[in-house]
Image 1 (cartoon, one colour):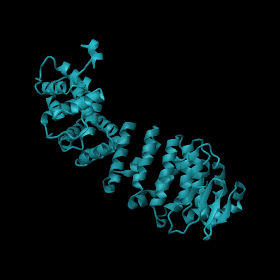
Image 2 (cartoon, one colour; image 1 turned 135 degrees about the horizontal axis):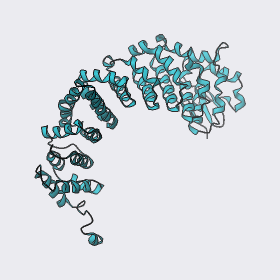
Image 3 (tube, helix red, strand yellow; image 1 turned 30 degrees about the vertical axis):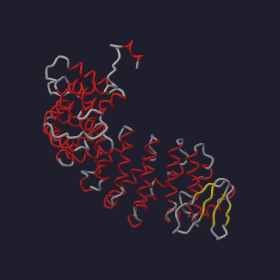
Image 4 (cartoon, one colour; image 1 turned 90 degrees about the vertical axis):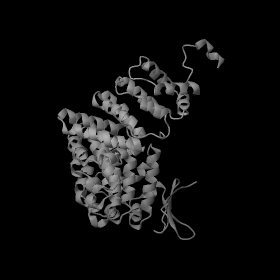
Length: 440
């Protein structure tokens, strides 16, 4: 590294030097509360963790993360505490060995949550990184949860502070850490039940907390612990697109439970039908996907299929296929493919009295769609039509042969429909569902 000689004094060279890293870690072990050059050593630590090379160097020092974390003093300035926490989070790629409960570190983290909201994010990211480790989970459960409960029992300002902290945790946690968060919160029903009403009538950030709680409980089949799933429907009309989208996606987790479906199906169908007219294409796509999940999760005797057939969901499908965003058209075709696998909906498209006949979908037009995903999904939907006698005959009656489709037979008598682009085979029900193939 001779080229660095002229940069002596200006370039941080210790990012590659294990001895310098060991010396730095030892320095943190010996730092006193009021040492004047604390800021200098924190600066050197941050310089090392700003590059992958520096992180690898520090990570190779035995016990580095533990030593540096336990060196943080509550009396330090908040910015200094945050800098060290961020540095440790950056260079640690493994569980911290021999790390045990430490009241001093816990007090450091709580001190950052007590005052400046600008510190919440760094604390949340730190917990998201280490919450799966026992020492961090115990710290979160014993200290952070208790701290949040104290805030909730305080005045309105305390409640608002609690909501802001929880919302930051929700924003920063990935799925694994997020489950850990709600797992810890579940030990405190008082906190969970207090959070719920605040979220339902709160801002978009708080609304997402309520929805995330429903998703966690439903994902783990704890439907009986959901405070009030009905009240979440008020969020379908929320002013923010992201909240409406997440609200629709939350229903995906609820439709898996038969009791919840039977209790709420009618309201779901009406609400989701209205969401197909939403201004946001993302909300429309999410709604179409949930309707498909609802159909396939429910049995005929639940009455949900009949409700869909006699709702705006069914009558709005032709309009959906003409929507100007390709994701909506694709999701609409995917829903129709799923519906046509059921006798009730196939009867509806071929009946002379139907309000939404097969011709109204104008599926052949979508074979020439600008989007390749839409064209491909259209072929899958046409393949589903060709598998069944009732819709296949209706297909012929309305003149789909004009689009190059013709019936052919394999040597074994298997029927299929073919044009220059697709093969839609009619296979026995016991066969694998592989109806769609591309012709060479």
